Amino acid sequence: MKLVGLLAALLASSTAAAQNNRAETIANIPFPFTVANRTLPAGRYTIIHMNDTTLRIFGSHNQGTVVLSTTVEGKAPENSGRIVFHRYGASYFLSEVWVPASGTGRKVFRSRTEEEMAGRQAEMEIAILRIAR
Image 1: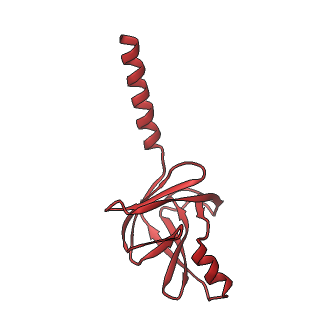
Image 2: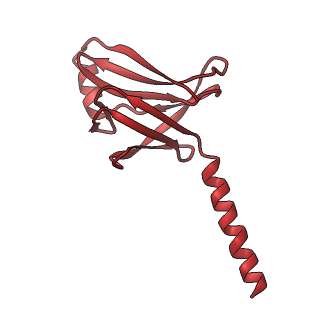
């Protein structure tokens, strides 16, 4: 029984440690935005780097989604992170998430709606939201 208790305690502590190692970014996004074909309202969002291919994005009311992403390399680490959006007119699309003090970020794959706007050769601008640690 002592061995079972010890194994259970080790498993619980390793799970907690794994959760703490996930890169987490919290940001107040002042406009509605689209990610993975889902439009989310303006608000406070938590973005968690779940694993090598996914990000979880959710707001204070647990509105959100899980999205596929890929690693992107950048310039030297900064004191602040950033969230990059592609903007077409009044529509914003999540593009990249950079954790503060990290030289790598996560690039989100384009949604179907963004692909359609890009295909119509709509003018695209980059909007960067800086986030503090």
